[in-house]
Length: 298
Image (tube, rainbow, N blue to C red; front, side):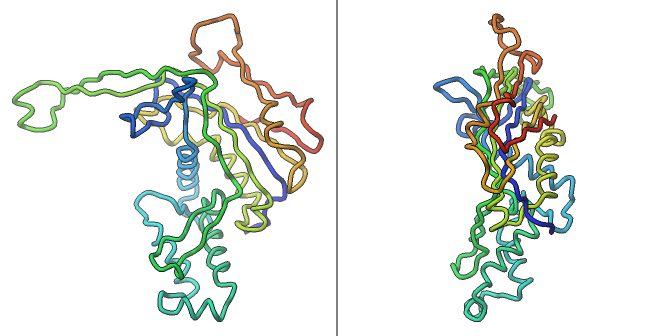
């Protein structure tokens, strides 16, 4: 793998949904998540990381160094066991190996970071084995996301649907159609803020410039291969990237996030927004602190 990144970054993702459910809440009948105090829609960080992982897996197809650790159908300790097999460590000899090689824990962790893109990026808890002596450690990743919130309140709607195909023979004798329901957000523009630590990349995971380019690509395309009836029309509209000229950064993240404003194109129009064109996104680049540059992608 190439050298770790040398610059700190912050970024803002703007994405929207039209007639879809961006992130259902299983504790509320899979209704779109909403902040009850403000009415703003919510999409969790875990949901967005899943989309990024899925894109990397689709684009790289398990290429060396770009496998995905947290994925459907693969137990975590199966992947952990690969690191032990590579370093010829077993449940029986792990204690002896650690006594003879004090750096064994780091070597196991580094093997996992080299081989799994999402560990290098987001980190992972790899203490999946029952015996405490046999694990791959814990890694805090350099890339972190916050929850996404909608720019304006959203009003989830419940839509009743019908189906003429009856499930069982017994039901077919009693009825001709079946009823169902789905929840949608008619339109919502969501904003998510993220952070990238060059310090953690250098000290722990080795997150590189190639990994960074792939992350931007994955963010811009994370909904393009994830369309479904439930998620409707979803798209990343813009990715705004702030790059510091040093590893530790030149300004607090909140100052950079505050420079990004999303406002209604026609503030006198009281009708609810129904498209991205109803908004204006602006970045006050003149107010950016020295040592910080801004790039807009989308």
